[in-house]
Image 1 (tube, rainbow, N blue to C red):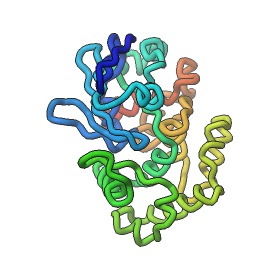
Image 2: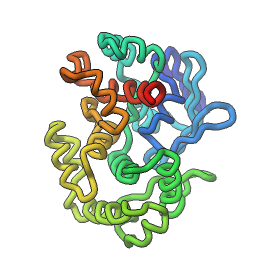
Image 3: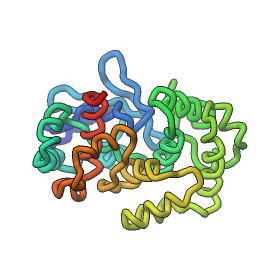
Image 4: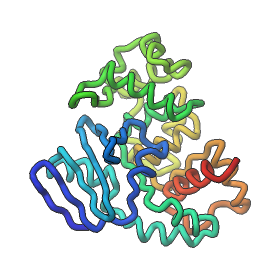
Length: 273
């Protein structure tokens, strides 16, 4: 991959294994919006970005070299060799064709606070409703970054809310979880930075101690918000996928099970009835 800096735009050439539609709209992040020109716009860590891809060229608009190096390089996992990863995953019989069919799914390295809140909201919910709730949360309590785009509200901001305030956003029974979560992060009962330094098992135990966090939410947060690529979220779809692995997950998944999960999840949603 080569990088060109052109004013407020950054051009990445020879970007392999990145499909923006599959990556930004596969249920791991909920605030990217597809534009009429097929580009995508969103806000990460309080910074707006418009991103598009044509062939193997990716264009990042309205950004800076500093933001690219501090946010976007890691967020889109540009430093990771996904071609090699996909070749490894294709050693598995089920993924050998699935990876080719849905080639280009990447893990988004999201902010741990936003990811944890988002997947608490995701419980027993569909993607459309999740997006609606998070959109209302950001418009009501986040800061407007540019017209129509808002930052994700901080734990400090949300810690001042009551359960009723969360309920007014349509969070339902999850309101009490969000109210407690934000207060516990602010008062130090939950240390998100510490969780990132633990082993996968230790980090999972820490998250499972959080009020309202079960195993699926914990694994989703670990994979998408804390950088644990071996976390393997299992929902209804993935339970059916696991029937194809009666002897456990194959060795080629080691260390990259979360990436394998994304391909298997997408395959299941499109092929299993």
